[in-house]
Image (cartoon, helix red, strand yellow):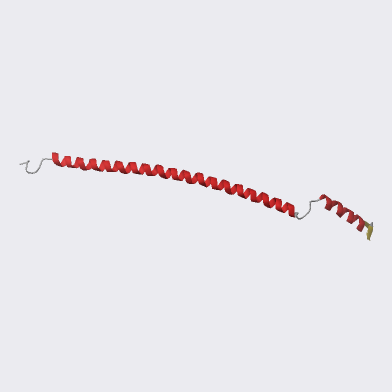
Length: 112
């Protein structure tokens, strides 16, 4: 034990042997600071596997999304085709009705 004296006070601290024993006890209780190569490899493989799974899930989500978009595009195209057909039919009907209206009006010659 090392002792220091300062103006009526005595300080006792551990000697070098006690310090070494304390450091050994605490260092054995703690985990090692660095990772072992096996730990690094294991963590790397786990991360790689998680990334692969995540990438596969993203590809599946994209496939579903694109499929939904294609279905929606087909529905809209069909709806557009129906509307264009209806427009054509109504325009033909409108033309026919205008001709009928012209034919039913009295002509200026008939009015006299």
